Image 1 (cartoon, helix red, strand yellow):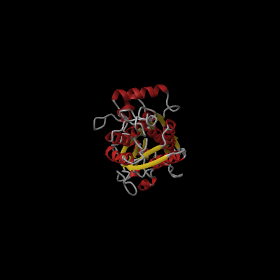
Image 2 (image 1 turned 45 degrees about the horizontal axis):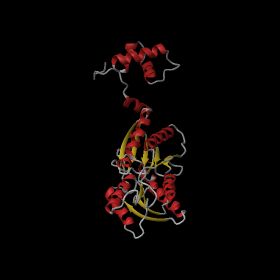
Image 3 (image 1 turned 90 degrees about the vertical axis):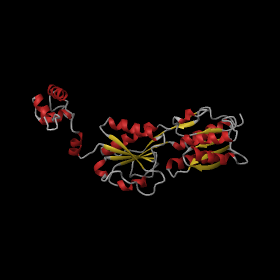
Image 4 (image 1 turned 180 degrees about the horizontal axis):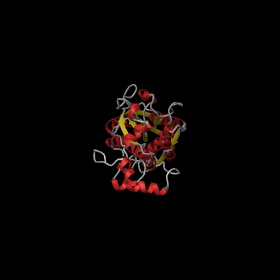
Length: 333
């Protein structure tokens, strides 16, 4: 028994009547074809009786790995990023990895600061969500995967959402209801995902006979969104539908509409994007595009594990899903 009172692999070897190398093979899962099943059973039984747990830190040190991944996100307050972490952490745990989280705000400038004194000694890889690839300049020697961040060339694997297709689905839905005057309440955030959403909507409305698009930008918060939506609704020829870059922005649009005595959807249709829990908390419930945030984290982790294993993973795109609820109707319904 060790001085700390905890059993060691030597204690397990003595209990099972085998060598320490045999204990290492069995408890490391590498015994097949090298140790008999009976011996493996004996070693596991001895470890269980003694309450032995391998020293994971020492094992990782021997293997030259930390089995830890850093997930970088712009904020921890947005409801979208919780499921991204959950998906990444669950996928990581199945392979003996852990995930730690750090923030790099979307208004930050230059390469991201590392939360570690020596990143190459603290983490094996990075998942960077909703940020520019240039932000990883301080992690040049660390394998990384970009999530919901757009094309990154051949240097960094990517897992993205099909946000442009999602926005085109919203435009087609509104057009099918008869809307032609559409307002875009866009996020004033310099990220690929919002540029892609805005570009797809502009192209879709431009292709509509008689289509007119007006636009106002805001921060991703209710107060700023209410003000931006209000500017569009105060125009002489106001939109009959507001397309919002985010469900939280849509909540601000609801407040702007009601402050002007407009009913949703009788006087104004409103759509969101992401389908976070807020979308069904609003009244009426919000028509939006569902993005599989948890799957983004899981697929990102799978891509990173492939990269760490020496693979060359291809870009992945996860489709969104238009979810039609009660916030949209024909204009003047």
